[in-house]
Picture 1 (tube, one colour):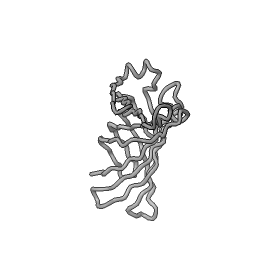
Picture 2 (tube, one colour; picture 1 turned 135 degrees about the vertical axis):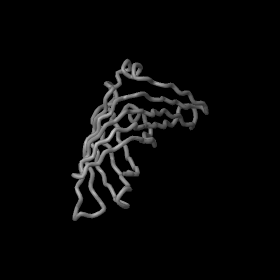
Picture 3 (cartoon, one colour; picture 1 turned 120 degrees about the horizontal axis):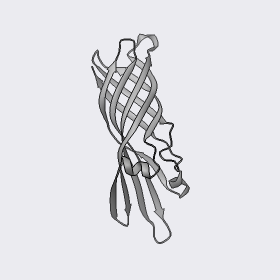
Picture 4 (cartoon, one colour; picture 1 turned 30 degrees about the vertical axis):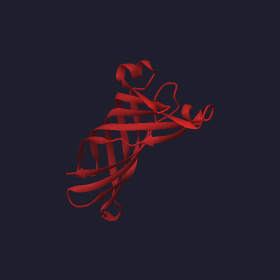
Length: 166
């Protein structure tokens, strides 16, 4: 919100997710993943010239989730919903202006000192399409409920698309 109040164009960044998942026969799924989420803000510098500057964060979390599914009419398409809890592992902050960029790594101690929240919690909604008995395509949307930091009224939001093998 601070970036938006300053006139920035704020967008989510692409990240990645890697982990393991256990799907039970009753449709209940649990998993543990390394998840990367990010945000980027671009500013127009109209004061001196028409150049732009940007700031971005790539956040890394160890996440655990529990999902349940609803399968309408026993079809290959299932609705997926549940909850996810993440623990902050680290981040990279990058600031670019006047053609030059500077990056800074933020570890868990630095993030805690900055008033950042070490835990992230939210809801997951989406769908799963069974390609065959062992392969499915899953698409979800994560809605974070926890502010990123004490003085930052912003939460994570992310689309996740992945293949489930097993």
